Length: 478
Image (cartoon, rainbow, N blue to C red):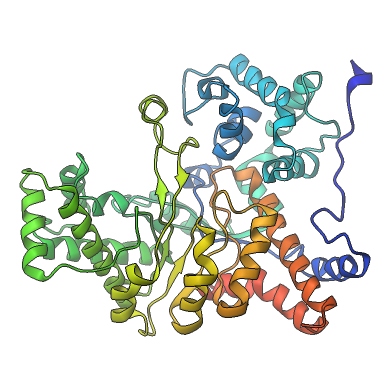
């Protein structure tokens, strides 16, 4: 068996250009930024993990179950998600099942060739856990035991890893009615020197056709102390909750809908459709969409008042396979990218608030076709409009470089917001940020060797992309 194992090593020049002169520049730039603190202003790590310093139970529940990037690849080859521990938080998934899930993953290691998931996982295995053999059927138990042994030590609890990874700032994703008790616990702990910020995610409160919308309105009223029986009450309730999040360290809100529409209804129609939905009578899809676009316009108005940054990531066909959603719930890999339109959809909101000094919106999109045509020119004109990084399916190395090329000429480096890992897979955060840093310095190195950028300009830009811009875009304190 030992003779069948292959060593697992990391090439120090991974993702750098092959051409020697350009690679040398990339190395120089990378050395200057590789150890900068991680700023993670948009993600999905549960705050309770950090607040209560919850031990990670086993390698599968840590590295596989939460990472739908990894799981969906195996699912595409016929592996049952249930055998990988999906969904998160199951109390019926035994240690032996967790070990078997890891064996399944190692058996399918070949599937990840050429993917960013291979890069992330290799970095985690080697740099965090000291694994030196490739995943395979023969090495699965050996790797599992090595990781499990480390997870049992205090050095591998979430708070210690925040220090080890040098995560200076991390944002979670939270329901508008959340008490934020875990964030408050962390803020009150003087021994905890990192920042965990809440992010208000109001999507379901803007979708009046949802069967649970009225229940959500009741919960919003209870949390805010504002009657949500009217459209005006909805606005005031959200004004209240947004300020609550801001008072508890929040810097942004997060929005994901089928389109970017911001065209508001006139007040009479908004009141009428809202009242109809609130009565329980129900609204048509067309009415619900029109009301949601009005809600988004009002969220932009509120953002121009309170300064919370709006992050938008539209155009996802959520839960594409209904049987999978029925069985496992959301966020298990079944969300598929769609095309979007930006210019017309965003015009009403940007026309009203795009020049307001307190307003900022960051657009992330999986639709590469709109970056150079729509997103970059909007960034070039509106002081408030920023481009988020390649996100979800296009946060792979080649896609990041395509995005940089499409964005920079008309949007500039300085209307981007730094890398966003958008993950609940805690251990992969350093590796994901390392991908972005390596690709960014490679892009800058190309500009230097082409005579389009001086080396001192590239050095400053590399620092800004990693540190200055995420702080500015998300209002992260220095």
